[in-house]
Length: 250
Image (cartoon, rainbow, N blue to C red; front, side, top):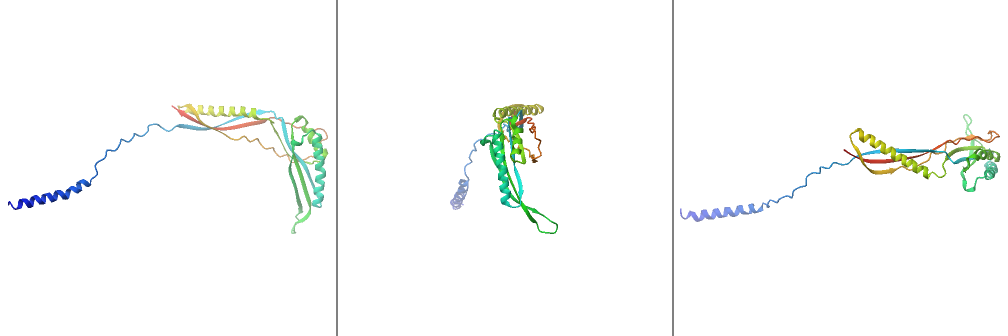
């Protein structure tokens, strides 16, 4: 029995050595830093609205497009005839008091004219030449007389007429004020309906102002009455649109 004691001790020691590395292989437990609690702040409650403001004003300028349209057997004849008549139009417009800076050529074209007989190839019958200028009339009282002068000078077409305000900046600013008031009134209405209040404006964006283009008239002028042509200018609307984001709070 005494001889077995050293062997038993050695076996016990070896067993302890065998298990020691396994114990050391375990990494020491690390204390994790405390994670911050989830935020209790809710995202902003916002509402996006569009506001529109419109200011009506009597126009003080008119823009008209007048010109000449002719047909002839040859291209050269068509261009020659339109040039002769167009020179008369320019002279008449200048005589009516329109400055050179208020005249601009808007279109010049030359096109073949065909007939389309049944069961046959198209047949060239001549050429059509057209020339038009855009005129700004700053004195609306002379607008009718200016149109009549164009007719007498050789013009035979009107392609469009529009009215506007020459310096719209002040009226446009008034429209901006109306637009933002419109958006704010809508925000108050919606907020009150759901038990909220309007806290602040987050962003404001503005749509570019684009005046309404002239409506085409496309009327022949040679049959107009001899007396001054009556023109009704009416009113023009200067409109502004804004896009506004509001923050709402309880």
